[in-house]
Each structure stands twice: as C-alpha cells, then as structure tokens.
Image (cartoon, rainbow, N blue to C red):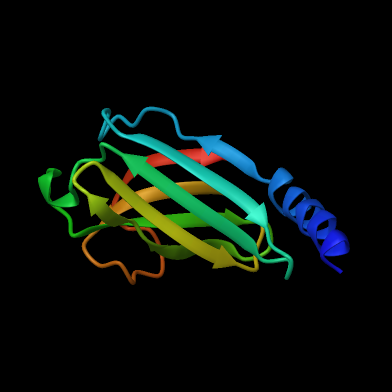
Length: 131
C-alpha cells in the first residue's frame, strides 16, 4: 500500500502546485521600497488561494495622511471588486496575507485604509497587478 500512496501523493502535489501563478507587483510610487509578490493557485475544491507577501512595506501609520491598515482587493470576472483581507505584519520587514475566494481574480491591488472591513476601496492605492 505504501508503494501506491507515495507516487499518488507526488502526482497530487505536482498537479496542485504546478498550476500556481506568481505575480510581482510593480514598484509603488507611495511606498517605493516595498517588494510585493502574490501567488495564486486553485485548490482541490476549485477555490482560489491568494498568498501575498510584502517586504519592506512602510507601516500604514507612516503614510501621509496616516492610515490604520493595508487592505488587499481582488477584481473578479463575475463579482466585481472584493475585499479579501488585511496584510498582517509578521515583522518590521515582512507582511503577509493568505486568503481563499471562490471567485477568479483578474487583478489584485492594495490600498491604505482607516478600517479593514470597508466594502469598497476608499484609501490611497499602494500597488496594483494584473494576473
């Protein structure tokens, strides 16, 4: 049974992770030192997994005017623009967001907001990338 399970596991891993799309955001005019990347892939339930990593992104409180959080948005084919969450600081040099959505994104963007639960973008655009 072990002999069958190992190849099946390897094939499943390759199928799930070989279809991932990596997106590198262009340099932001607002936070030019930031290096932002996204990884998008479909899981076995046909949901879209979005992993955002931002390195060297200035704290939103340091912006002018200051804000409370960075919100990540996806523009989708079928449902318009959706707030998928807030970037969480893991350290002073790295912020991350891991989100799952049933909607296929065509664009990802980040805004600086006063409130992370806003339903539509209101704050300053930090970075934007097409998928």
